Length: 399
Image (cartoon, rainbow, N blue to C red; front, side, top):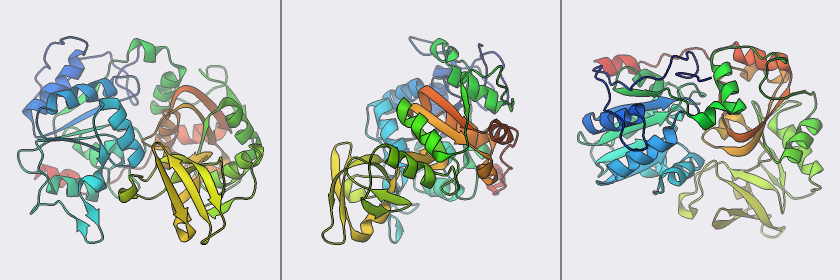
């Protein structure tokens, strides 16, 4: 410490520069030169990117961008409901999913090139999760005068669907790389570990900034996570240490049994669950977590779930939209954060192990991080970069 650009390189902090290479404005008030550089690019260019690793002030910059652009018709959006909720908490303004913004329906999107969004500016957070088709749909739905700012950490997991558009945009449109790590983050062993993982540094017990627990069974992993009040994360749903096994073990340890079938398990009163669909009418989005507050065997079996300020009943086949949430896959956790997180990487996860997965998993933790599984599996992930994707977007952007 101090550390630099983030995974893949750590030069000293430097002023943000746009594609044209001009230095960013001098810092004013609480923002850094880099952060004011992002605001300057957003004022001058139709499409810009803001990226940076943990602890570099993306949230502070997001708030400043929302304040600056909020003088006009501004929309804030993210790929998932949970990420949109976080964006709303960060900025103090309403945010929504990209699909809701575009008016997704059975016949496609309401907003498109012939019926554009009435916006002056659009800020999209967690842009690393956006696939090429969705980004092209967003760009088709904005007018030539709309400013689009994409914010994300390019070292997180790529989108599940084809493409890697955020990576393609780097260097193609004006980009701010936040490099300065703030003092509080410099003292965080979680941030230190994230940068070590991003740099491909193998974990060694004698130099690990956090304790590591070798384990082979779901019961032990679930017990340690429950004792710490931590959200469990694993790479896969199936297997001896997949989320199905971890959720079942955590539920047993919590003293719960019975319940009604949901996707990948059972759920009853007191169990945490996650919604896996966008339920726009109810205001419950894919990725939102809640707690089961009611259970009934009538009408095919009904679970009532409390999501923040919304209580919603899932009757019969509608329960398929719910999954147990003591443990989540790392992909499903992307876009979310918790005070305490427990991450399990094991040899049984080998097909899914990658550097971006390990990096994404550890950066879900804000205060406490438990590392579990097999050290060799962690090192297999860290030394296995995600294979490059070629989707043709770079060529389209340059034509």
